[in-house]
Length: 477
Image 1 (cartoon, rainbow, N blue to C red):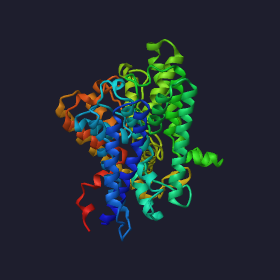
Image 2 (image 1 turned 90 degrees about the vertical axis):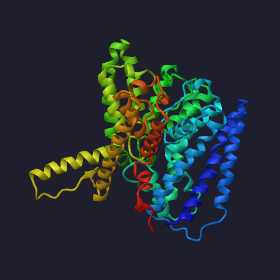
Image 3 (image 1 turned 135 degrees about the vertical axis):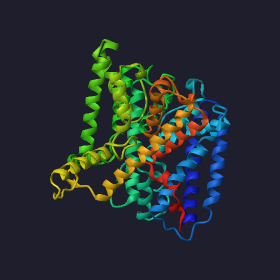
């Protein structure tokens, strides 16, 4: 285990986090908020600690898969711990557990909150919440890799451990170039939404917050009603961008290079199909509430995009919708978006592999001697990928079940507990009943919040990096 190299990268993480804090610091300056000093103090502490740790370069810079997983897991924990400090130092969230919950919810792009009145919070705090979504959406280490001098193979170990989806591929031969390409697409799309919202009439502060929260598919808004108070055309714009950020970013790379066959993969088409079908069913189901199909379609499409992309914004309290709509919303929490996007959930690519695996096993029962490989888009799926998906699902169910048991100690109802865990592990944001769009997670005790913090981190990093921290084999030489 190369502990010195792990420490070095964690030091660089703290240096970059001090830079990230410049965004809310600038916001505090613009709006003359005294919170500036809390952000400055946190940034100074991060910078000092980072410089101290990285001052001596390790002689051995070799990293293997094990180190990659440990670096990713520890990075996200440290990022969240230091990211919680501004909430505490400003007094907005004085409780350490609550502040950590808010920070983890931000960086993991879950968007669940314990704040009862968002609109009374300083603007710099609201900007920090939204910006943590943007930082966590694409993956902070994917960004840092472009600046840390590591070999391509070492970068790939980290990229695979942090990136969402069952597999990570390189768009170009060099991993660093791939990371920069992905972040360029990410930045351009964020700016595109920001400018579009400005043109649509949203003020600059709210437009930037919304763009950050949508891009990272986080969903922490600046209003207590989320997106409910905005004009219909603004809600439509956000709907479109939520869907776009839930699609594999490789798609946009291929579209830029006019490789349409590679762009519109089975996964993308299935995502669009589920989005369209679910929106139609929910629109028909809630039409009796709004008595206007146009309004019903707008609210249903927005909600489906928010849940599938795991952004978690809301225009209406879907907790009050009919049971069919509520059931579909819960199902979509688990589906999520595409691999290689900023969305959470199980991911459509995994679901495709699971269904094809089931189909293959059924055929083997009928024709035992038949040898058939699972294929997607004409490409055979390696056995290692299939095995990884199966192991992921076992771990997913185990974490979900244990979390449900722990949450039951708070004596909340079953739907509240179930959707709270589903929201946390799938990085969605709102659930149903006591954790619906019109409510928040402050109803839970501190021990339960710690479990949900674990679920949010585990879900964002797709189980393995966090779970490996608890494996004795990880720490053996």
